[in-house]
Length: 75
Length: 280
Image 1 (spheres, rainbow over the protein chains, first blue to last red):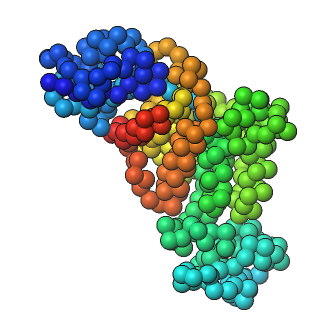
Image 2: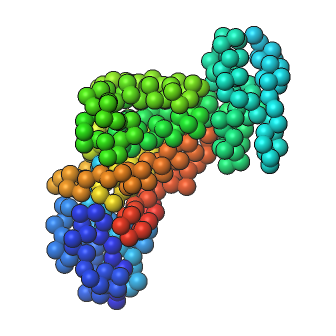
Image 3: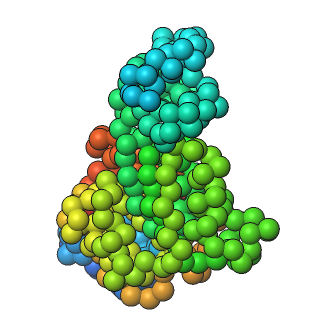
């Protein structure tokens, strides 16, 4: 089971080398994935899975596209 | 002069628009002179011209993406724009040039040197000067049909309701996350669509929030820690990209169309050309 992962902005420093084809450890939720990547939970503002804003307890499935976005407010 | 008299005067000064446009057009200076003679606002003369199938020349390249009806609606429209920095200055530029009828724009800040990398209203000569005043001067110099109501003060919890009042779209072009949630709530309470955007480094987001629906400001407020732009900065290309998409969505709302981003959030990273549109 693999997902495509994209860590935006300041979360980019947590993005693994194999983000385009990242192996899951099922059953794995968004919350557990964030922890496994070493990202402090409070740094993630928006999670989306397959183009939909998703809650942290979302169970990930093979082929999912996961995006993690921090708080961004500049203008 | 009556509307019929103005329409006849417009017809007399009009000429066929360049190929392949199948309508007539009129020069801006001639329309402005007519407005002075008729003692009406330039916007009024432009609307009468468009009603009579004469395009003000300055809008020729707006067609055919815009119809004449769209252009009339835009000239009759009212926008509220909060923030006149990187996002807001560019949004103002695009809305004014497009022919937005009235823009209420607020910023209590003055220009400082670190604004020069991205803020189109700033220049070395304008350091220390009011952003709102610069906006009023710029808008008036770009398009006399656009009425600008510049608020030279920060909009806060107390004044935000008055700020959004009577507008058809609220544009959140604030710098930083403070006040974004309050602005979203004020827009929701007044049942006005909100167009909102922000940038950090090469990354940014743009969203259109239907009245009362979930807003990015709510999501961003849930995250602790500092906002990413404090570390990553706000470089010009990402600010320009976000501002342009934001202005396009606002122009859609103002001419009565549902923007493609309605209820959605576009997240982008120019570093790897990643563009994701997600449902809010």
